[in-house]
Image 1 (cartoon, rainbow, N blue to C red):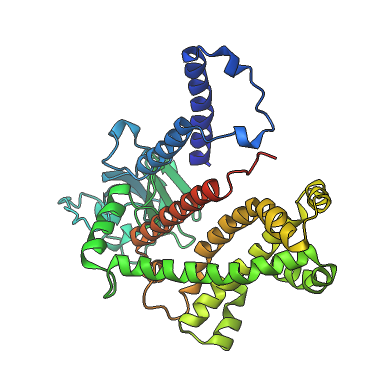
Image 2: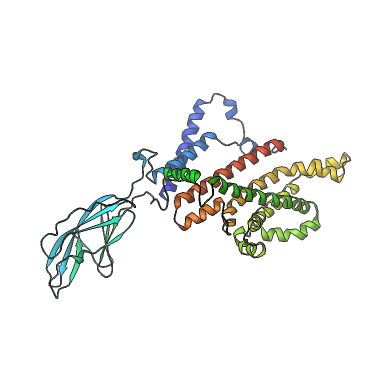
Length: 421
């Protein structure tokens, strides 16, 4: 919630700041009065907003992981690291009290703690020293070295002067001291707002892992082989889905018989997630490459069919009537009216289908894949290698974005009439 709140705050502040700067720098007042609301072709991405958006995400990522790539003043409060100490008050069954000090060394994972030497002190309650990792909690067995007279029972009744009962807690500046129902103390250092590396590594850790895998490969294959296999599966699955889905959509848009026959099938399969089809694909096609491509084919098929059907249905009937009045045949109407006017919808459907295929490739590579970006992510997740998981997600996103940009360029070149009536 804190991250979302900061993101929303930066978004609003950036919007008003950029608008104010642009308004002051603009001298073409006629362009400011142009009506563009509702005109989709007049809405283009604001490049300043795009840059600020990316920088905001990176800044939040770096701030909440304690990254060295941003100044420390921008870091979110981190976990407590260092040496903490607190006093506890022990009471014997005869009512006598004694105090002792617990010293706890809190270190990051992988660091070797330097344990201080602590004198045991006087009285039956003895001073203790222990070590706990950051973002963790641990038991503090203060009674293990206390000298309790025979026949007596010892109970901890307070921490730093604050009463403590079984199941209760005392909050200190550097963490929380709790007591289990059986009377054993446990210490949880303050976690701060930063994420533990096992949950979210810093940007430089992900970059370092990327360089390692780019140089040495992963599980016997180069990084580019993994990405190439994923790209190959997605493209082949998408192409087969488009080759069958587009003619099917045209047929459903032009023939009431085809519409009635295939519409229940398409509308039934469209909401079924590709993940639900994995067991059937394994049974029918095995665990080889064929099964993976079939899964991606099914992910793209119904989207392309619906896009083509929507494209045909969206053709203005006035254009068809005009073509007929000029003596055009059905084949000419199909070639010169229906196909050109349906291409914008088909390209939109293709972009959606490609995105769904990229989202499905991870699931497709669950099926005994030896290479692929999805395989990297799934294997790394089993060993809690979060840096590899995030690296794979970023690579899939970058490649998917690149393909989407390529398809947008192809749409501008091949369908220049989109949005022009």
